[in-house]
Image (cartoon, rainbow, N blue to C red; front, side):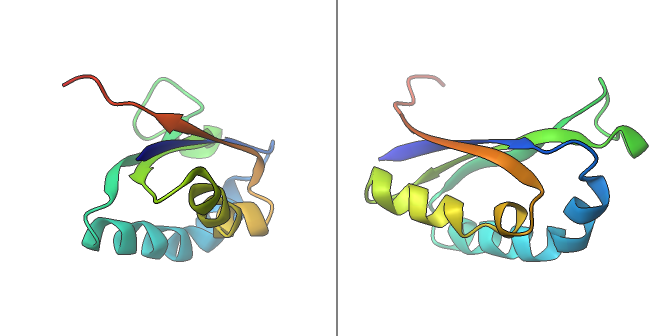
Length: 99
C-alpha cells in the first residue's frame, strides 16, 4: 500500500537541512531503485521552486510500504528527523485515485 509521509520543518532549520540532504536523498534513491517511490519533494517557504534563504517548511513523500508500521519506522529513521530538521512527521495510508 502507498503511504503519505508529511513532515513539518522546525523554524530556522535550513542549514541543518542542507547539511544532511545527501543522506536524506540516499534513502529516497533506495526507494526509487526498489520501484517503491511515487513522489517526493520539499515545500518551499516562498512561492518559488528556489526559495533561497526562505528555506522550506517541510516535505512530502509518497511511497509503497508493506504496512503502516513499516512506513512509520522508515520515516522515523530519516536523517531530517533524527537531526532535528523535522519537528513533526505524520504517516498516513494513501489510496491513489488519479491520475
